[in-house]
Length: 258
Image (cartoon, rainbow, N blue to C red; front, side, top):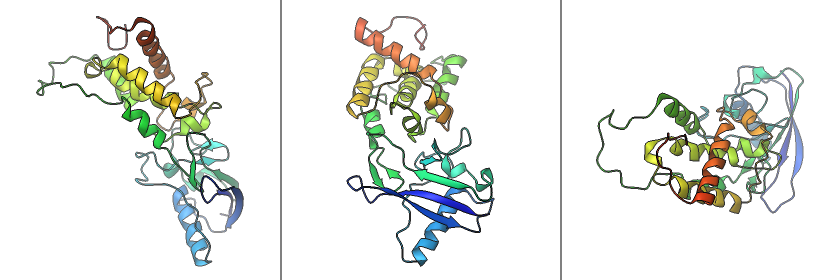
């Protein structure tokens, strides 16, 4: 099938960018989206032109590196799908596709469709881990975790840090990402000793990186390829309020703040 691409080209964050048009005449519906871009880049290289820069690694929807915007939607039209899992059968002959990088002050453009998402790494560095000495490994059933809490923790841990939530948010907020990383540990016994310190430190770094505030529009949840829920943001906000106003660790109750 024939596909026309309008691709954002930008040399670096300090350069002005613009859209350039490319036409591919023999795109197979069985190609993945990134394979289609590989074909485009082969043609550009043969013509002596600069290939389109785009980020990728595993191409299995795990690493979170491949994200960009397709026709105004982060990762493209299919729900719970990363760009590398998107196939050309999702489009039809004659379609025009507009490709551009994730737009956010915290995600400066490196080149073309590649942005610097290291701000997310710095949020993790400010508390997204357990640093207390937990001693020797215990027996499997010695630390009891409810099925509900373990399911929620696993769902939050599914976040791959792709940044689609930031690109979809009208405020360019990273709250869905940050709340997923906070919730993952807040729901487990191992995360309780540092729970209050963690949420304060990670949210302070979130704001310092230039991400906007969350206003509960919900576009982030829709754009997330792993289906991370807004309830994580509510949990994060509750933890932050507790830490700021009460300034003391929880006593009793469930890991989810009950």
